[in-house]
Length: 152
Image (cartoon, rainbow, N blue to C red; front, top):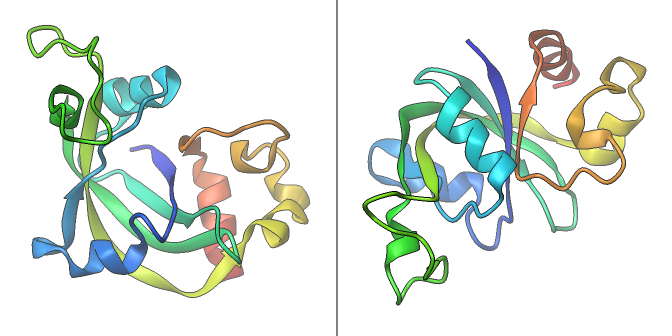
């Protein structure tokens, strides 16, 4: 089992949106970064826990927990010219982009903000707090996961 953090802007798709979906499950589509794609495609497994992180908002931070509900499969939004994630170079016979489905587990009792996370020496190696890291998907170690939950 691996642990993850996935970022989303709450105005585009937030934790409440996930909680409100049928079966509280939604495809995590539109990822157009090769490193993040590779993690979804090659490393994420059904049942892996995910921190749901709100970015680009008044209080960026971890707001909930989800889990991987379906292993990677081709991101069909890349093939739809009417979709904002359309990629004209992507080919359905040899897909470039992949996605996983995530399922809502719970909201945290409070938002654990980015500034609070940055102040924790135990999280110095967390990709989220490292300078220049802008990935929307990143691994979290078991020790980091447990520490962060302890902050709740």
